[in-house]
Image (cartoon, rainbow, N blue to C red; front, side, top):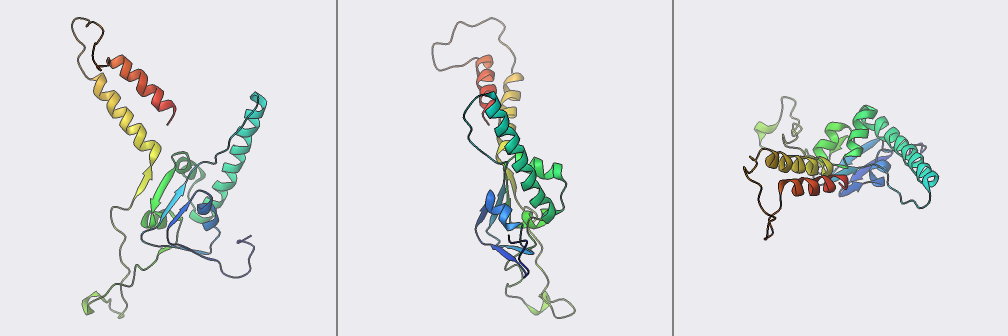
Length: 190
């Protein structure tokens, strides 16, 4: 509906535009983000009950919904569908500067309003645009969790095996195999 509006649509994100709010924001002709704002994108979710056919219908519906959301992000950002899909798969959070860098927003609000000295002006007497910080943030919960599990797994794989088998631990100790089994179980639920 916002895209059908004949006037100019300006979206200002001053907090968090997560999930469906991020999709709505894409309808803006101009999307402005506060330096303290965040945008989060993820795959669509649902709850389903029933037999295998019902589950398959839910999967098909989610795939269709994801395609429509990717359409909105693609039109605004110009990113490839596969890049957007990957960002959604990983439940991605981005700060204001990363949102502008990736095309989810057009400009960071208040980026030009600091006090300035005369040396801060360019040759035309205009205040220069502040450069985004080098450490803008893109955070993916799934990737962080996967990295942690992989590092812990690698750590235990590299430990030398005991030369003689030990008796069952009597304290809270766990065998490497038992830890790997638990880590793999956790991976399935991340």
